[in-house]
Image 1 (cartoon, rainbow, N blue to C red):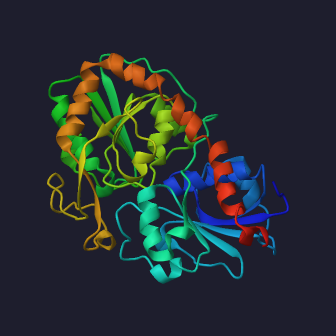
Image 2: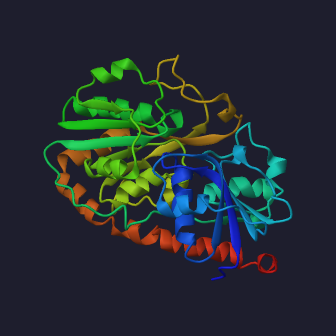
Image 3: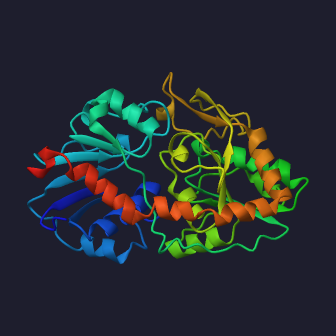
Length: 360
């Protein structure tokens, strides 16, 4: 590869968001092939050494390619006269209200993480300008660890807690299952969203709100058997793939980003129906909508997981731990398919294969 080529990445450089984690992993690997510069719009503690080393360097005057690694509503647009790429995701069948569609058209190329998102971007910028490259994980860090599955099944869920993440569905399903089966649920609430106090009255349900480094998150994964990833929409869901890489299994909605990795061999797909995006929830109290008004665009849809199927899969696990153990052993395909070394090469092929890029 061309070490004389400098790629400037703009984005959140953190260890506590999907975008931030994905960006850190990608640029750390890309330093093996090209020169990398970083334009951080925010940073966090616990960054990898490769990333802090890049941040200490001044941004060079000559930039070959600009990559905006952000949500669509945080887009910067074309950077000066540089070949500019947006690497982004959407979690429903259209854009939210705070997205500037004209700004998106200024990029030379868009890379996204699943075919549903490709179609959404394609309607605005043209399908010929959009490619799909999944996010990647480093299996050298997210190592497989065989679980000692006991009588009590240990469920967990983690992420930026809101309605889209389906935390309401996860808690209600757990509440029903816990009546008849020995299990627990830990919620890692990374954004400290206000949770209903009555949830703490449910037996063996714990809400964790302290920050942690990657090692702490990995230990959290190792201490649980199954992640409830019953989201209504995901661009990819990096935590679920990290969890699978460590040898756990996942109950999740098989739509959009989840469909990129969901399979019966190692996970438990949940049935769903497509509904219009709404703030209304049959489970959340009316004063806890957990959704920003910008998400509410008439006609936009996302996947509503069937709560009876979530419950059915949780019961299936509690009653058949041997099947769970078999699925855990099958997670090696995740470590192979989404290895950051493979993903980084895929990314480079997408941005360096065009003649217009080679001429920059």
